[in-house]
Length: 312
Image (cartoon, rainbow, N blue to C red; front, side, top):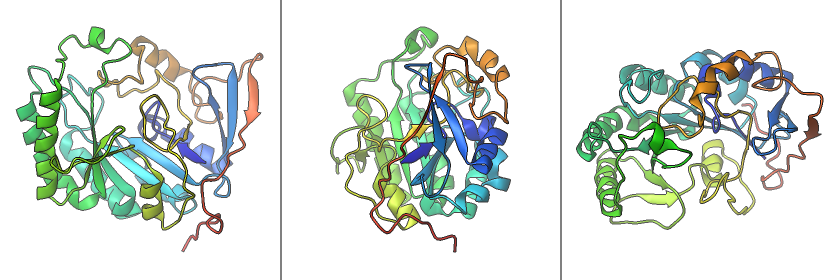
């Protein structure tokens, strides 16, 4: 089973102390967003967790301690660097700071474990296709030597996003192809493998592959292990990722990126954050009297003989 600490909120950036406390104590609770009365306990034990999946826009708060996790668990890191302005990403470090942090992370954990995310691609009067070509090349030149590849995706017009961001422009299929062709060309220039998140086959003419953001092949190559042939069920509709279990909670990310569908109710983010206790097993709030707490079975995807990770 895979543990994810970056789907619903940026735990690495905003809940760093809680993250390391949970791995120190060896367990965490996670509330089901569809059935909030159901809470699952996950054992954070190398014998029970095949790998820990990270996704963040700022790893700086965790760099000094990240070996506490990487020395015991298989890991994979996604680092999102878009370099939009503060109008889009008000609480994200600037381009130069994030690139330096990414380099540091790569040196600590190894570039084979690090993927750059350029996600989401959105179009406004300010952020045009031409802007993306210039921006992506600037970022690729700085980031490519320190990552295994780049994952790109387009903004999802869901959960009332267009009402929150009326300046967003619809991206026609032909325009998407042009953008991907430009990005693919830049990827080839910097020997940077690029994958478009989603279901479908490769498109050699674009220089971009299709597939889930996270798959067992990535984890296996990064950690020198082998997995059974498992169908990638995804974490949501039309998702081609390998299924994982997330420890976060929606509407709790202080990054407050305007395009983010994880903060579906931005007005509740601060209130949720104030309910956070870095020493409690739940990320947000506590167990309620009518909650049902269940221990996860945590079935392994590993091939027989891969159960214990070498620390040396």
